[in-house]
Image (tube, rainbow, N blue to C red; front, side, top):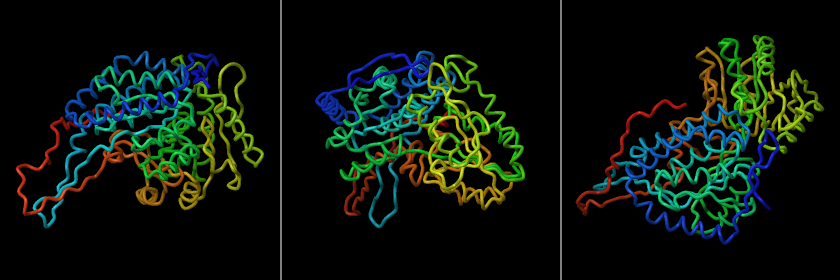
Length: 478
């Protein structure tokens, strides 16, 4: 079955690709294995040089790459530009900080010398989604290649042109042939690739269904896996919050990437004292979002990536209303060409309904009124997901309770949830396990090798010195 690139704003076929045969996939795995044997020995300063060049190419070609993203998955053009710049930031962060992260760690013991060194593990398979077709890949790619691993990318089948463009960028930056390859595969072929004994590990960003299947296979094969799956992030507003900032951020947090983000705020939990004002202004803010052609500068919300995504969102909104929820604005798919859905606000979604615990992947928000912080935390945690949370309060005691009691991988106080190369990113519960980004993300696919040198041995000079790479502070993350 052909792998098709379809413009979600027009429904027109852009390009079609034949998937790799199993034999062609095996040849690419063989190339990756051969590449790893030499690439893992390349000095870190050489990898850093290539990574910095990759960042420069991204910035130089930002216009063409942004158009490619927008045409293939539908996000507004300005958001696509932001995504490319963020990828460049990640490349520079790891080029500048890999030496510190990978430096051997001395550990005092009774022996003459003991330390932990970080070694690459080999071929890592990345199964990535379409919603951030460059950023999702680069937040894996940059630390993996800087660490000395090599990578195989199985990208979402609706963004094949982005997948091939990323492979081309990596090669043009100077990375050796075979260090990063995009595999245009059908879904069922992932099992075969992961089952190859030369593939050491897998990282998955995507649906809970994909995570369960690939994580289960990796566990059976005793291969390392990292899963970053769905989210239904709470956005909590308490009486002491800066209401103007909270409401403005709430609208952006729900509509980021046209609502198609795992860390987009989806459940808005608001204290009774400020609820009515929040509801009125939040609804007005959602209604003010400009839906339309993602190629136009003034567009806030573009089409959803696929027809299936619109169908699912429509079914979820209808199920919520059948269960007793009220629609305050929106609620309908938009007529005409393209995969568009109205910015929507639901209230009164019963906790007994299925939709209450599902992820809404589009510009649909659920509002909840609570009497106090206890109820706010209870509702925030009453979800199978545990990715991130945003809480708005000026009360120090409330802040500490949110930090300690919210069940998630990241808590953002008086701020919108965002990923940052300097900070670990990931979740708990059914949002997955493991971390991306920062030192923690880089070390997910490294072997923490313990080295103990007996006091009876006097080595000339143990290999404990880090590679000489600049460790200057990174530029601010966009």
